[in-house]
Image 1 (cartoon, one colour):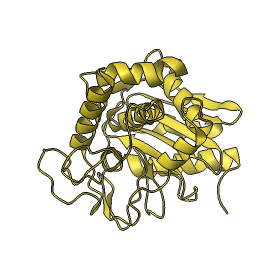
Image 2 (spheres, rainbow, N blue to C red):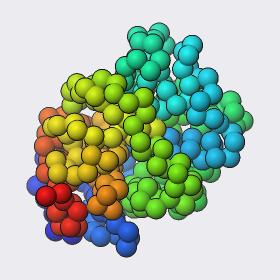
Image 3 (cartoon, rainbow, N blue to C red):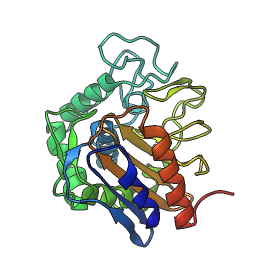
Image 4 (spheres, rainbow, N blue to C red):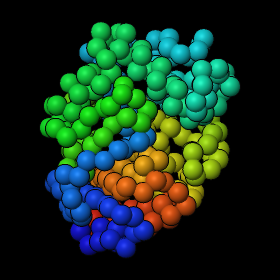
Length: 274
């Protein structure tokens, strides 16, 4: 895929990426086996393990977790009221979209308590091993930012998000539907949005503009980016997924380049909206 060649001019020491569709791998660039820190791209992986746990009966989305009145669903959707860091709520559950690393730490503890396994082991058994993501590892039990992985592994996960095998299609559909609709919030590093739609562990593009995904991509596009200069998105209408990893911390350099690349990927794959 020619669109990926644009990454070679990015101001980053190292970059690798891949695009997948219903037919499998559509293109790749760089060293697909290069293992690096994902930062917050960790969250969709942990969230997917939680979906597996829900289907197994280990967790329930609406069971209490976190601050009073909060549930597993609130934690996954950054609607528990917990701050980015810190244990003291700054909003009532369901009142605001407050992006929270602490919320994912509480989520991990909830999953560990329910399953009798530490979160790293559960994510490995529920997601990494069945998808053949042999290079992926959740380190330091950091459910918000602790996965190290590579493009070869993450393209397998992106393909799973296009055609789920580990959870029922209905579970994925719910996870990629706006939770607690209409909440305003902030996407760290991008800005404030009202509304700021979020699913279960994944950000939803919705009507956000500007955004880090393709400007003409579907509003149903979902995914996540990480402070390590990493991203993964899936456009379920175009039936395309893209993952790119770099080793330069997220900053002003990233969103315009990511958006331009994402649009070029969609255009080349035939999925860009008119």
